[in-house]
Length: 69
Image (cartoon, rainbow, N blue to C red; front, side, top):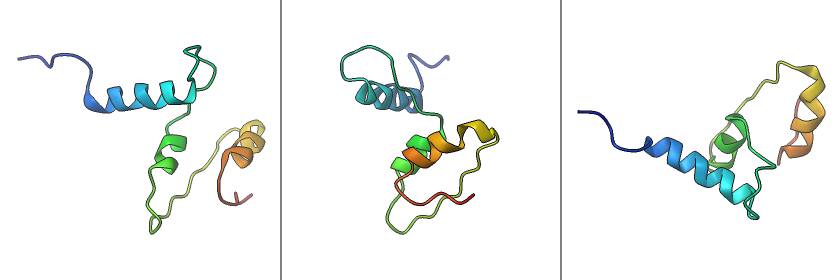
């Protein structure tokens, strides 16, 4: 039997995107590293790598903790 409706993880992601766009207009949507970083517990550690150097400043501005170069 096929699954009815979207997967729970997809529903969670859509709700997360809606939270970032409260007026209903899609202006902001995070790549997968951003929501993952928002779900970290205090004891968790996460290392993310940006492959496009032109996006590094955006990542630095969005990060709650220092970003290594």
